[in-house]
Image (cartoon, rainbow, N blue to C red; front, side, top):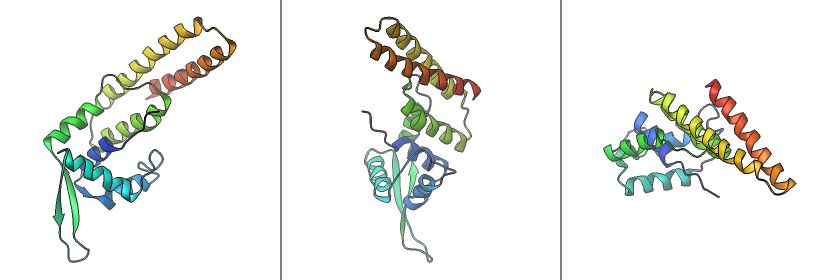
Length: 169
């Protein structure tokens, strides 16, 4: 089972606005932002920031304030920007329903935040789902048991629903 990591989502948030960890965490806690998609703890956000910094995708610098303790504010590097855009416009996203619920919706959120076009992101996802639907339809026609038919029918119905929803976007 693929584990989703929020690395690119954090890159997008930082691209939109250089931030410290708690500001980023607020986006994951707010239901009107990413809170309906991701469940992130403080330690998880800081672990991702550390990983991104080690990879050279963000740079952290200490920011001093009279009103609050010193904090590390992160900004994206040019390498980080390239990786972010490659993630956003990946021509072959996964067609899995879980992927769509977490990663695809995160991409739309980040594209909105950065005021970027979403058409290509949506079209790539539609194409991926359509391709997967064709594969499973072919497998369904060759199913060797009623249970296999049941499973494939379920998957195809999920893909149908995702495709209908994507069309409305």
